[in-house]
Length: 472
Image 1 (cartoon, helix red, strand yellow):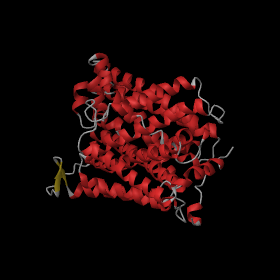
Image 2: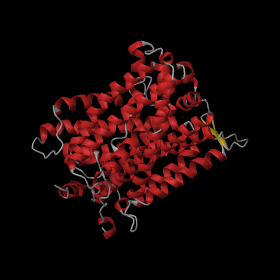
Image 3: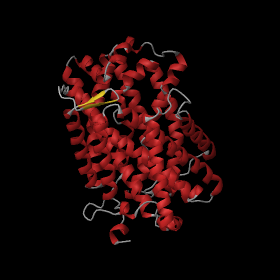
Image 4: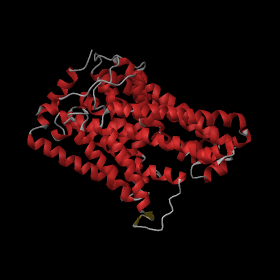
């Protein structure tokens, strides 16, 4: 193993950098693209209630991550936790499925950028290259997606400092624009538009809970960046939990501001309801475009965080022997895992050629994989409370066993109801199910390769060495 592989990630992130990574990963684009659907499906208060219910559940999972991340503040996250609880084999497959979530959602962001830009500048193209699942792929849409992919690849390759600065600036701009929208809506909006507060009662609330869980994910990118922070271990847990709470508040504000600005029926039929609401409340179509620009920044901030999650997890798996050692090589100038960045970047270049329908395929397959990874982390948290009660926990969750049970039940409920044929939210065959099964097949092949080469026999010792390096 060369010096390049032995290089370490640099500790350069402060608390605001880490908070921006977690918060940016959670809020993303969903508040702008899906807000109208949530209001029309559950009512204004019902949509907020759904986020409150799922938010409590996500806080339970987040608390599990707080404790585990403070105990094992190394890149790898779920890989480290499941290794400690169950051993290297379970750790490999848990981390590999989590990788699918990050990689799929990273690829998703490029296609989402096309939809956002289309709202600002309608891309009417008479040239259609081909169609996928009923959606046309045009040269213009490909150009937009690939340009965004190139931009994100370059700033990701340049290192965590570039990523964090970009994320910080984007978050500040987003907060200012949305604050102006919310304050104006609360003063000029019509409270009659909030009716119906609850549509179809509790069933309406439940109908969007699974989707809320997907849009409250992303905080798990913080553990992937934990090794690059210069913060006390306990602070990392506080920042992780804070990112979840701030995101819940963000969804409340944007949902209510949208609902007060336009009637529920209009919100439900709008392509980007918050953008339409901004147009109405300011009486100027430029206002909506400004809000959509903040939504594009949301796409980019979540893209940044997912890139960090994907590349740091691949790097972590490689440096302990689970994956080929090339994934652990760090760039000589930027100190980033550049081979991992090339591989993840390749998916962002391929995805746009699958057409806009791939948004659904990638979000559902990636969302399922992330929920599985969250479930395994929550289960590890619970098991370690019994298996390793004396483990140092700088951030120790009160009533930890009860919190662990709640986190495990919530996570695996979401996993099970997404199995094909189980519920209306099941993974669609063949597209979404094949993505998951194909990724699993590649994982099995890599696992077999690692075992046959003898690398996997060293995984347990290698992870122990990494953990021994943890700052006290």
